[in-house]
Amino acid sequence: MAVKHNCAFGVHLAKLVAVARRDFAASGLVGASGLGGGCSWPLPFGTNGAFSGIFLEKCPTTPTLFERQQQPDFLKMAQAALQKPELEVVAERMENEEAKISGSVKAVPGGYGLPFFGAMRDRLELYWFQGDVEFFKRRIEKYKSTVFRTNFAPGPPGYQNPRGVALLDHKSFQVMLDNSKVDKSDTFFGTAMPSVAFTGGYRALPYLDTTEEKHTLYKRLLIELLHMKFSSMVTEYSKAFAETSATWELAVAKSGKAEVGDSSGSMVVNVLLKSITGHQDPASIIGSDPHSTFQTWSFVQFAGTVVGVLPHFVEELTYHSFSLPSMLVKSKYAALCKFFRNYATEALDLAESKYGLDREEAVHQLVFCFGVNARVGLMKKIPVMVYYIAKMGPEFQARLANEVRSAISEQGGGGFNVKALSGMPLLKSTVLEAFRLMPSTFFVYARAREDIVVESHDALYKVGKGELLGAHWYYVLRDPKVFEDPQRFNPERFMGKQGEALFPQLVWSNGRQDQTPGENDKQCPAKDYAVMLTSQFVAEMFLKYDAFEITDDSTIDTTSLKVAFKSLKKRTQISS
Image (cartoon, rainbow, N blue to C red):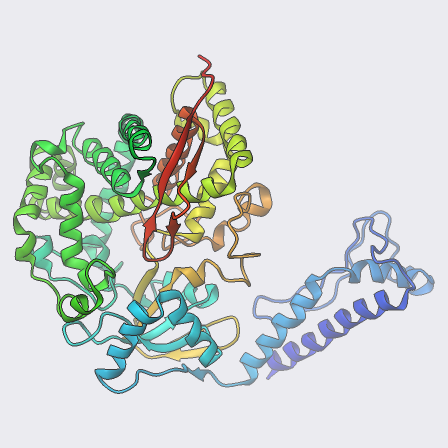
């Protein structure tokens, strides 16, 4: 009860202060700007939201509290302090805390509908009739909550129980980062867990929970491999970019446009596979189009979550209802494994000798982590960067070009240099803003380890042990209570101290931007490398081109990235 009373007292006090602020401004006794002078009147509150006292900060030009009480212009000084809009925020926050403390934990709103039919309805609405963004938007409005029960696709008849709880705000998403509360065993694709036959009979690292010993060992292995191979990746990226950009120029000259998607996928595959194998050509074993081989293998195992490849009714009658068999891609997967088995010997030796891992299992783990996680993550960033930078127009592109070239020049000129990234704050912020708006995947899942309480911005909800939790990053990373003007692409959002203060809120990597991935979390082990390699792509673009444009029909959304160049203006002057 003491906490409740303290909280209530704090609410009323904060309200009075906020009201006083408005009344003072309306009275005309003081100007809107107050006195200034750097003095403040903070209201410190405990971390539990309870009021812990009032302290009048004393600065050299500020009279003591007694002197203020004796002087007529104490009113003015108080008004200067009361100009702080944070007080209204404090009042609102404490009202919420009071409501949470005084009221009971709520049951999660929403429902699943009739067995089978409710799940089918939700899948059709999610995949076809509404799309994911509209699907969740309508339910937020219906239940007046960003936390609610729903069916997650694909569902019956061929997939696991689709029932779960959607978490669609930044605050409720925090539980997904707390491994003491959530279990991520076999939840990488929610209820669409493919057969382990797709990965040689082994569960790939993304399907392992942090409590499993193999998760720790393989996470350590990947972190060490990325550190070892990053310089090779940078070298290969420059080579692959030169080759790929030349094909873009030819396509624009020939047909007036150059598709970005497939070509960037091929570029990324070459970078990853040549880096991990000591510059071996993947075509030697996999075939002339390794990217297509990876795409086909990935599609067949994750087909239940893919939309728009075939006509609607065909998809619903086939792979949205039943998982596809691994035999369809058996030969293609065998070629991928053979390439890694033959040429990724350094990585396999490390796995076996240092970490005590089974060599054959390590082959399958590397194929998945580099062929799914790293490949998809990096290749999707390229059309996204092209789209947003093109939409910002020539003046913004000129700013990026000047920053890139100046930073490279300070490092001695020539080609791309990783050290030069420290001199490209606008570029880095641009990349992070693109990651915020368009992460490589939008769904993330887990199960409650025990009965837990999930806190949204507005309420507390009880979730039972074993229940499926599903978050959608579109809503988490565009939460208006966390990011100002969240739908707008603001390339300067993450610049300077104010921008860095937002890093803890940037969770596109299944972890905070200001944290380093570790063996005991589910944060992407390549988080920092993904940012640097995507930054390298943008830098390479402006080392070669002054500006570029995309076609009018270029679009990006949560389910597709359709971007094509229509012009590439070569750099007019290249200094040595």
